Length: 314
Image 1 (cartoon, one colour):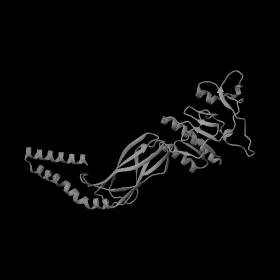
Image 2 (cartoon, rainbow, N blue to C red):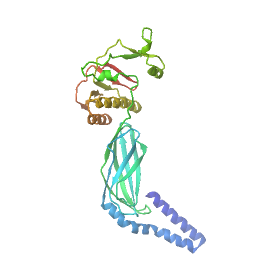
Image 3 (spheres, rainbow, N blue to C red):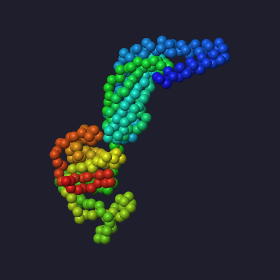
Image 4 (cartoon, rainbow, N blue to C red):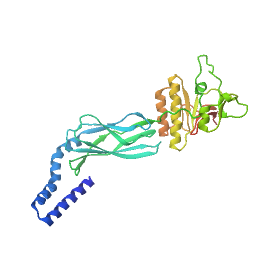
């Protein structure tokens, strides 16, 4: 609004100066028209501004989206005017991604159905709280305004994209049993290839990624476990990768009607459905405490920023 007011004052001053210098009646008429434009704008816009002021408007958005999707809001309300604009200032905050910003939107003209607006940037993995800083209805020139009632804030859960495991292949052996309850195959670890290992056990794909020969080692047996430990750090990129691999694992187990027990420093939960998975991510992103179990046992499948391994949790 201040910018429009300054622009109006500047225009009036320029026209007045031109009239005083040239003394032409055309410029004087133009000066008079520009001078009275705000009054005309207010006369045309005031009834509709009052109508907008008396109505209530609401915002809502999608409950769950994926990382890098567009954050969008939907605005609900009724406006029947082409003479007013409505401007919103919306704050959004994501503590997990350390992402806080203000976005501004303008709604022009009549509004009979919900209007969808997209934010400037894509969403980041985490939990977004969105609420209205301000909402005002303006006249045609954007000089006069009324505050508009804009109710509701809303939240959006942004899930990470699934990522396949970096170093670990035999997930079924560790988590999923066959019908008889026996393990499907012998469990193996990966190790650097050395003399005494079978060359046929070299994992060429993993070796190329590690830039050294990596082979399966069958002489170390680890009992199967359903425990998953997420070794989260203070780095967003690492945490995003850890949670992406956890999401990959959790969805795989849920699809096979299985489960796991996931734990961090703050949570220890059983994940056996989409609902419990959603609740788990909410707790992770909001740093909420939720311990359904006191301990997860001594052996756990650990997902770290650098890879995955089965190890003893102290």
